[in-house]
Image (cartoon, rainbow, N blue to C red; front, side, top):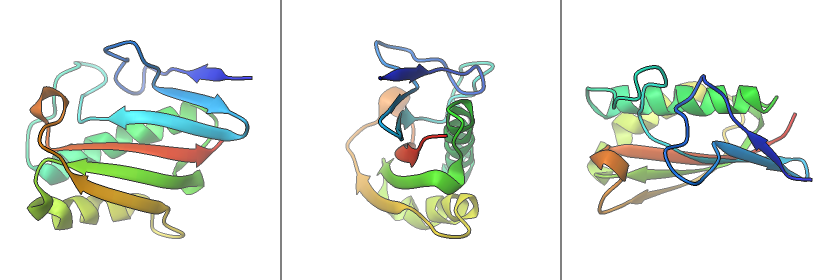
Length: 126
């Protein structure tokens, strides 16, 4: 059975989607952008600051699902500018010190609210 995951520890959904959906032993997280969950404003700063907020948002949703960063199987990273990959990757790597998940990283023309990074993931539930 499908279970919808929602937490106040990450930005509330601002459209017709869920923060995450658990199904058949996996948790599918919607893309997170660098929105502060309290103020719902974009985090100011460079790609490193924005990536940090995105990773903290993902972590909060995973924890609400009873999962965690160590159970992430796959991520997709969307960057506004691929030349910022190194700075994003440095922050990203701190969240996956061992057994990093599979990943795809793509440059896109534009992201919601014109942010620099969005990341989604799939993880093992519970």
